[in-house]
Image (cartoon, rainbow, N blue to C red; front, side):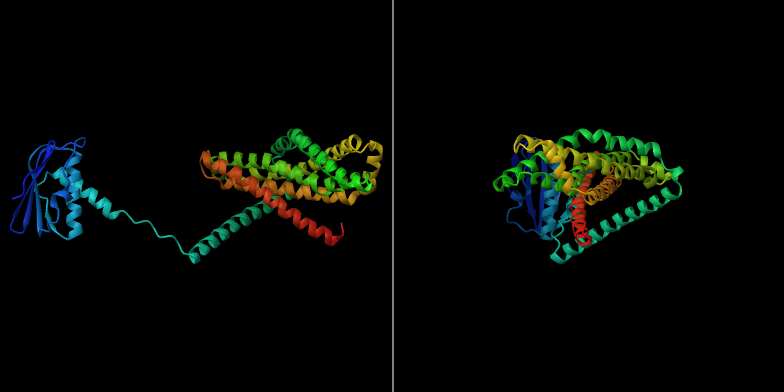
Amino acid sequence: MAEPTQVTNACVQARTTGDCLRIELCGRWKITEPRPSFEELIGAQLPERIELTMDAVESWDAALVLFVVEAMRWARAHGMVAGFSALHVSVRAMAEQLVLAEASRKAPAPAPGLVTQVGLASLDVWRKTREIATFVGECVLAAGRLVRQPHRFRWNDCLSEMQKCGAMALPIVSLISLLVGLIMAYQAAVQLRQFGADIYVADLVGLAVVREMGPMMAAIIMAGRTGAAFAATLGNMKAGEEIDALETLGIAPVDFLVMPRLVALGVMMPLLALYANLLGILGGMFVAKSVLEIPPAAYWVETQSIVDLSDISTGLIKAAVFGVLIGLSGCLRGLQADRSAAGVGQAATSAVVTAILLIIVADALFAVVFNVLGL
């Protein structure tokens, strides 16, 4: 017969009867006090059967249940026959639930292989491409309905968005465009002064601002300002189930929410680009007057001689396309946003990144097309 093992109030007595190990639990079992360990108690013994009783237990809590769980786990691991019928029904039920929960717990799935990862990435790209194509197709159909039935268009909402993305964006567009013109003129002045070609600062700044930097900087500003605002607004509406309410009423969200924003941004972007061009040229003029001592009149005449209508037209075409791309990106990400505050923030961030990416890609395509056309 084994000696009783006692740890504070909880104690265990084990004795062997034939091929059966009988374990008697006694004392007061508390989770806040030390308790016996089943594995230490069993040691190297490998009985064919174990039985637990708790007739001498004065009080118990989760500590006793954990001891019984250890016994069940050990018996299952060694393929032993265990008898727990003498235990209190509550103790046995709770211990069995814990053991079953451990057994049903799934092992972490192995990391997918390279082929699986490529397949999953391809499916994700296909799904996102299909969503974008569907959204663009809905916008094209909505534009057709706008042309056929302009009286059904929400002109008041469009004018409100034009004010937000046009007039209210003038301060930041003015600052950035003026600084870009100043920087370009100063960098050009440092190099051209070495060759006595100071006057050509006007040519460089004029062409660069009108054809590239004016539309580009205005588009980048609007992507961070207006594109994110579109995504956040539509994302909040989706989280508040307002878009679901529109669909329930039979109102297409693209017609009601997207088209006024697309039209407003497509109309205002060329105007903002013209304004950015003017400020960029004025910034170059200021540097030419202060650094190179070129009179403003001479600078303006040189700019007029190099910049013609084709240069301005290419910039305006770019600006209009950039505006549509920014509107599409912001509205698409807003409609795709998760129904949570975090989802709205992620949609705004994604809208800015998508818009800037599309702007750069579109500008590269325009450069190739205009070069082929000789513009």
